[in-house]
Length: 435
View (cartoon, rainbow, N blue to C red):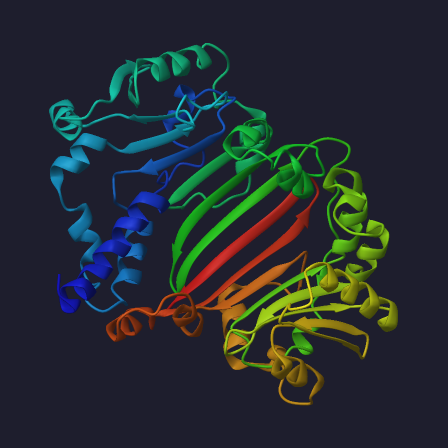
């Protein structure tokens, strides 16, 4: 395929990704009628509005039109009538609870209500998938054994009327392209099988070992795409973090292409010292390590891609000693620079970045692209953590594609993520500017 042909394919590919990942459940405030045909103990539930109509799909089409040759790309993907008739108004992917199969794959089923059963038959023609009609839905799985697991799980309560499901989705936009629900406790149970050695610690750190659930939606907006969601914690150990206004954005040099801020990580490190192995990981207590991250900390990439960690500290000398001890564990030839000054500890892959951090040049908080991205995303002044990525300048650091590719990246602007505390967990938002 020529470079020109490859470039023309990009808008169509973007539309295909949007279809596969971000389709949702139309105008309904619940997740369509499919919730009644999905077990309550499902691990992951994704509902797809395959009517491909309404304001959200129109907005998605307008966003794709901002890419070269993207005008009409979504219609090109969705214009096949046989596909629409085969899928019907809603399609669902559900990851069931319980053990993975013998090949290590998670237990997955798909549900839909075809407008044209013959079109659905043609869609599955030649596949080895097992299928059955259950509660008015066509259910497709990778074998009869998986279908039996689904039927058995459905003998219990369904997602319809499930309190954890309702809480996770509560308050999220109804006019969304996508609705996703994840049962945290079920995922925690499956995690050791899917990734041995991780155990419960990754989600445990987020959820205070209390379990919980996640609800999320994806929407097309006038100037970009937004994922918005809730992380609902349960149990007495769950504690909401305090909101803060970033000070380090005013310390980091302007022009950074990525910036991630978080606050009081030290408390979490101390809290999970036993869970994370304590002295098995570092030659001192986690309290000493936690002192490095008691205030705001940030990781950022400079304009040339050099990475720097900066954190607020009270005792610069003690922080520098702890950091040098940690770096010593990695060996003598670690290519990093470390320094402590002005109430900050900084560890960087570049002496140049440390010099810029110490200098008196312009700061990220006043950077036009940074301000524009945060404003477009609607991020509040106070969050419980946030991140920023300047997509255009960052892309070449990840992939050295053909020159024509840059033209297709031009509509992509800042990506911004943040979270906020709520009474029963956290709210989060991820926005990617397209304009």
